[in-house]
Length: 379
Image 1 (cartoon, rainbow, N blue to C red):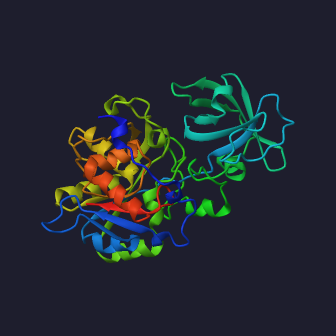
Image 2 (image 1 turned 120 degrees about the horizontal axis):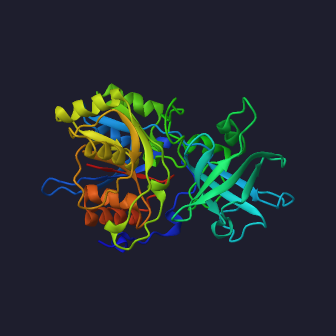
Image 3 (image 1 turned 180 degrees about the horizontal axis):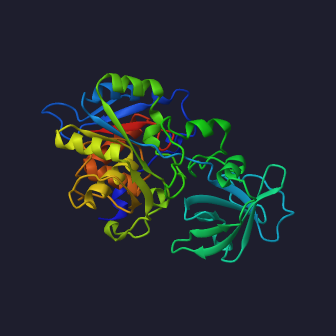
């Protein structure tokens, strides 16, 4: 297979730039992989229809990772006098000396994997300085390594005793909106680019927090979750911290030649018990989002028993057509970028031609695409 086999043409005006006033008001395209004779395989509805599409006894699995303001604006060595302002995503040039850093993964107390802009100009050994709104430097980091695909490893200088790194980042950082959202982040994004079931970092967890939201979960409200439980639908939560493995571009033209970066995940004993009980009793496991799918299927494939075991680990699974699913029976997902690993995962689950036909239908019906967009339920 070629990466270009997963291409489609999306009119730019269908890329959602803002969240809807109501989380649960998104449209939802229902894709039935095995329609009954004479029945359509596609139907249009709204996210609230999920209450009717889920069955009593289903297990809904959610990714409870928490997004943090991982986008930092700073200055390079020797450019302290340069005025600092957040880069306009539509601008083609940076101010002299200005840098943008996206923290994608915490490696240890002081070191982070990151993406940087302008990437070609920032070399190993250079220092970056991140000020607050009045210009006082709050964080300082040295570039200590360059990765195979341009990512950098940053080593932050130790902070004063009693100062929490995440508290500083929360104060000076920006919500890591994807580059196709052509605006600066706003206060509303701190709430809306976060699921209502996101949990703070757990003691002993690996990888810190997420640099992107598990977007299929953005549609849920507390009221919807209450109604789901009232209908006899069970829920379980796992954690996968979203990083490079989720949104990195595929650089090899042959699909099978690509590999994804690892991302840290954890599955609690309670979640593993619920998932295995659902599978053993023939109940459906419904994954909310591609990150949940990757976590569950990675856990099953690396388990000697084939069951999902409680664990913390690193998932690097790349799911594309031909993959044999062992855990997931149905999937709620947003619409994904052309030629992306996430689109390939959905195609593996429902069939490439069927999914691309669904995307064509969604475009004709003017669905909203990507992170703040509409969703699709596949069963």
